[in-house]
Length: 304
Image (tube, rainbow, N blue to C red; front, side, top):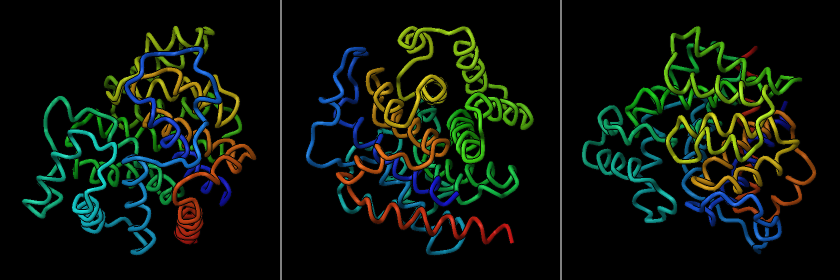
């Protein structure tokens, strides 16, 4: 399981870094692999930066502490290194800077239904791998409120966390998506996120061609598109690297979609040799591995 924690964290950051240069690109089925990987250094964006804030805070405090996480986000804001930051997240952090209260900072509008929470919740999913699902949901809801006070954003982040949680122990990829659908249903969350996951599974069962599915599911930063596209891509891809390549070729919000898809795939496949090798070019590789190991220790200690 420790290896799967490492794989989830490394794969997420790798997907983010590899997808970043192609963000906003149209769908390109023939984009060559060498173009995707041809860089001397893989630098990640806000997806990984924010998830590492969460991971560091959990490791430091031995629990999820929203005030400390919010403090970490403000330190990031003050640093000026806001690579990749979305409009909603930036607005929320400006609100947080003014109010100094994470309960008042989250943006409330239709644009808050983005994937800015789903992109950063994997450390929470790993830390709470053995926790009751209501604790997982409540933690994600609190985390979401810091930036995205929107029910679709919360549902999408919860769906991603459920898939990661299940992927760590699952033997069958379909079970990962079915687990998310089942538990969303049991929580009474039957909204567009829920519907999109059902659609993704249905397209997979029907053998839909990949880029036909991209067209039907969407590739934007709208959390409904992200959850369904990453789930479908996970189902049809054979490993983490193929998951990343497919999600980059899909175009749109390539860094976040590749990060989330890779995190789910990493949790399922474990630390594959290709991921380990390619991650040597990845920014903060050593810290990411160490945080994953510490999250594993904390997650197991909660079980005792």
